[in-house]
Image 1 (tube, rainbow, N blue to C red):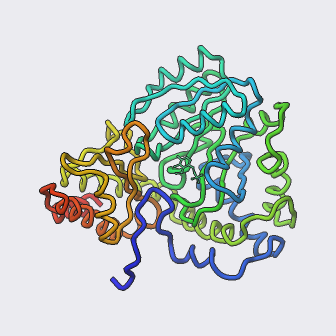
Image 2 (image 1 turned 45 degrees about the vertical axis):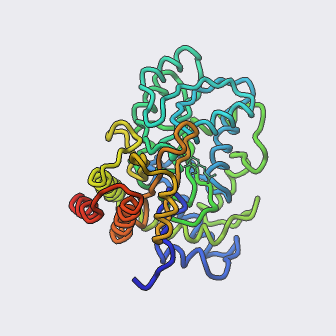
Length: 388
Ligand code: PMP
């Protein structure tokens, strides 16, 4: 392969389509230029398709990270003193709970051990007992590789008259999520994961009920996060009218239009299927390497990343051994098991480029062998290839 730069296989940022990278590079478009109005307006329309959102749902595109999108949801939906239930599956749910507490909310957490998801009945119990009008969930927990059951949790929230908010930073554009069908109220993400862009955009879609709740809160969020400040701007862009509140990340929005158009053109069923197959292939490879995944049940293992335990006699130095062979994977993140496992992203462009998955599996197998774990890298490669 001519391109020997390191292959980026962490759970975000990810390898991206060169056509999308081209849109993100190049001379910056002005935020009032007709071509830019078209890219922004089209992006907002396409977000509804990729999110599976209804025509009355409101997309927001704001310069920033996933954490900013989380802060936007937390502060637009809560007043100090409001109660909120958080389904806690790991590192990013911890962050959300902290964020809500900083906002002054009264937070009830329903926790699970690393690699597990809390039962929906336990979440229902917390909603009933607390009388909370808000349920916050991490769709895919990037620290453990588990996926929560968004459909069941959105339904549970609805049964208790609560709005449901999903952090899809490691899921949106890869894991099945049909916002309108399942009745979710907010689905948020960032540009650097399965959406397939460089980092720099916070992306969020809010249901009419979520927007209504913002209007009934008495403590406004910080101005730059306030949905009511951004609403006229998003509407203007969707009508291809120039407007200004705070300068959009114009190069990234141009890239967003390209990447969302590609996803929509492929069709979300195909996108989901591609990620499900890639995940099955990677799981088969781990099995061939006699490695144990962190998620306890394959049914709740994410399609977007693998979290895999180091085998006996191998430690976190494996990540550096893999990197020295030109593939970048991530170490552990969950505070309780940080030193016991590593993480490999398999979302977006890599799932359309099997050579990337193959090179990753082969290199991990070789690094494991070098570390003293007696396995056959070629067997892992064959298992991956058979599954995808
Ligand atoms: N939530 C989840 C599930 C994530 O994976 C991440 C990033 N890894 C974030 C939130 C925060 O996103 P960012 O780093 O862009 O602020």
